[in-house]
Length: 159
Image (cartoon, rainbow, N blue to C red; front, top):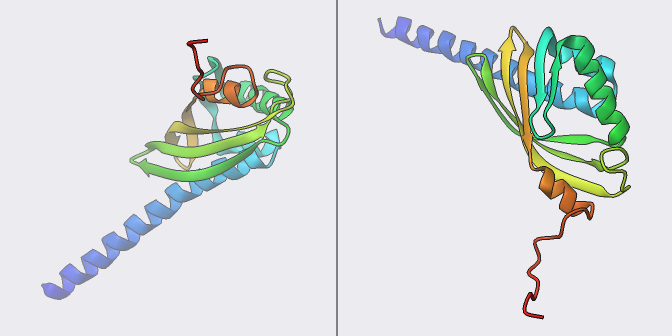
């Protein structure tokens, strides 16, 4: 009986490790796709009927064609876009991918200035592909960094 228990523990542990590796691969593939600057590498990470929303800007994309257009607009607006994976947690087909988005504003506000902002993608999976994606990040941080909003530095308002 003890031997069966040990074998069961090994099998369960191996299965959990395999799931964990698959989930890490989804996050790594997501980051690598965006860092490729190639829409044809971004689109296959998602299902054909993906729902992808950039909540910050209210950009809703349904399906591969709209996602392709959205990705192309990101690569045009921020040609040196880089995503850094901070962490990910995916369980039961749902999870998060936390990232840092860095680049130079060429098309968002056309300032030519660099920015870096933390964000998170809340995702649902179908198989090993993302079927639902919501991106959240602080656009005010970007606007401060590129000079469109005042910085957080304290000002002497008594003058």
